[in-house]
Image (tube, rainbow, N blue to C red; front, side):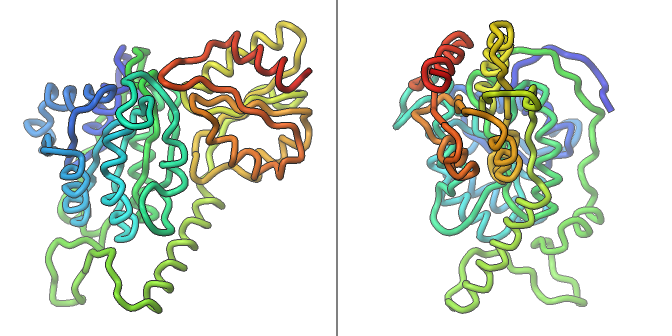
Length: 360
C-alpha cells in the first residue's frame, strides 16, 4: 500500500525502491546520469536498518560479476549503470541469463555511440531486447515513463525475475532518471529469511543438505546435445513470457486514424503531441510500450489494422521501429521520428513529423 507522498528524482526512486522491496545487495559503479542511485543508497545506509549490502565496485565488470555471485545464492541482488557501463556488463549479463540467475539491472540511458554524451537517449534498444551479449538469450525488459514507474517497476522486476529465473532489465533514460516528480512510496518488505530464501530459490548455492544433490550454478556446458536441450528450455521460457507477461498502454486508440508508438520519456512527449493533434481535429492515439521484451506484437498488430499510419517516436536513429514493422507486417505506413545525441524532441516537432511524414 502507498505509505508516503514524496518529491524525488527517478534515480532516487530506484534506490528507495531497492530498499523497500527487500533487496539483499547492490553492487554498482558511478556513471552519469545514474550516479544518484548509489549516492542515495549510501546516504540512506540500509545496512544499518535492513542489512542490505551496498558496495561500490572498482568497475562495471566487477559489479555485474558480484551480482552473479550474490544472486547465485538465491538473494535479491541488483546493479545499475548507464549506457557505456551496461556495454561493459554484457558478458556478465549473458552469463546470468545462461545460468538462469534472477537479478535486476537498471540502465539509465545516455547518448552514444562510444562515451557519447551524458544527456538522455534511447539508443540502447537493440542492446537491450536483441541480446547485447553472445548467445540466444533475452532479458525481460521494462520501460518506465515516470518516476512512479521507476519505483514500482523494481517491485515488479523482482517478481518476474524469480518467477522465471531470469535477469530483468529496467530500461530508463537520463530524462526520467534526473527529473523530479511526486512519488507514492510503499511500506518496506522485509528481506527474506534464510528459510524463505531456500523456499523461494531452491536452486540456490546455499549449502547442500543430505536429502538432495548439489546445486550447481554455471552457464558452461561442453556437451553440444545437452546445450541444445538447455537452449530449447530457454526458448520455451521466453515464449511463456510472450504469452503471459506482455505489458502496454493504449490511449485514444479506439477511434484513431493515426497512432504514435513510443516508450519511456518519448511516450510522454508523444502523449502531449497526441493532445495537440486532437485539438486540431486529427484523430491520433498513443500505443505505449511498457515491456520492450516481450514486445506486444499481437496487440499492436490489431490496432494497426484500424489506422492509416504509424509514427514511431524514439530518441534514436530508429531501432524500435524495426519491431513495429515486424508486428504490423508492414501493412500500414510506418515512419520514424527521433532526435539523438542527447537532444529531447518537442511535442511540436512530433506533431509536425506526423503531418509531414504520415498524413501528407
